[in-house]
Image 1 (cartoon, rainbow, N blue to C red):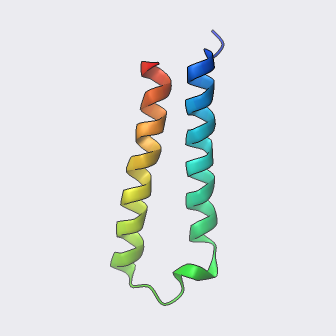
Image 2: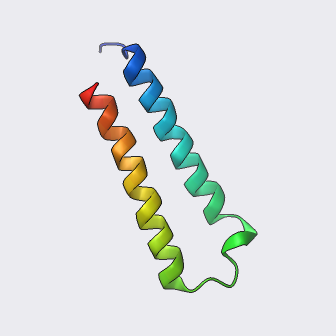
Image 3: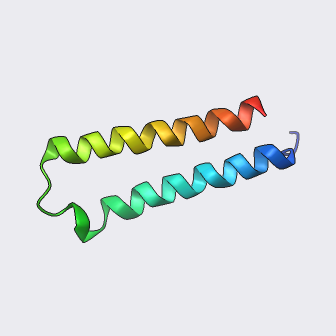
Length: 60
């Protein structure tokens, strides 16, 4: 298995950070009182950001 290039490592770290932010947000008190649809919308938005970061690890 090949190692990451410096750009891939950077984007992988950024993807991990976005993932950790999503998980932290889901388990935080800040989602209390939000409608299911609001939570879902935020997950979609952040999920797309995560997917973009993961794709960048393959492109660069």
